[in-house]
Length: 153
Image (tube, rainbow, N blue to C red; front, side, top):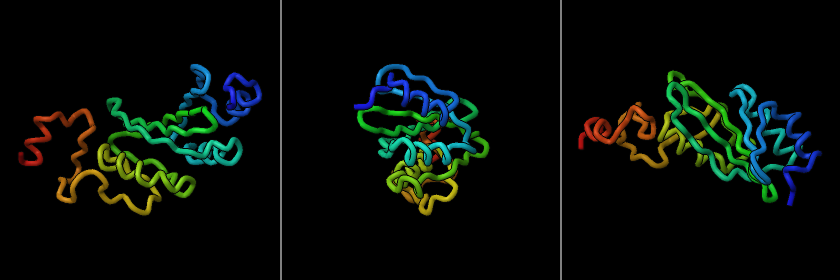
């Protein structure tokens, strides 16, 4: 197992990721700008062999949506945080780098309204086809009462 405390890995990751926090053995968190997301994930895959995408988490943080890409390698997980505005929620797709990301991107698109630029299929995954446009149930502005009124239940 790779030890995050290993100076070589830590230094290599710090060259790729500028805002990095190593919280404990095996857990790394980093913040990136959305313009750099694809390049950074590509470097993690090619240079550091982080290749298993465990999931993508979406979080409504007020005026933005934060996405957290959890990428695993030999007992370590790096969580890449990136934000996009709620007004124009767009992020580049990583499906061409990690094909399995398509399901996570579709789920985030359904529940938060984030558009993954370059994703070949953003059709509904979780919500029914009849779900109303611009209603994203995991955004904070959609509480249960408001959702019920909007979808007519």
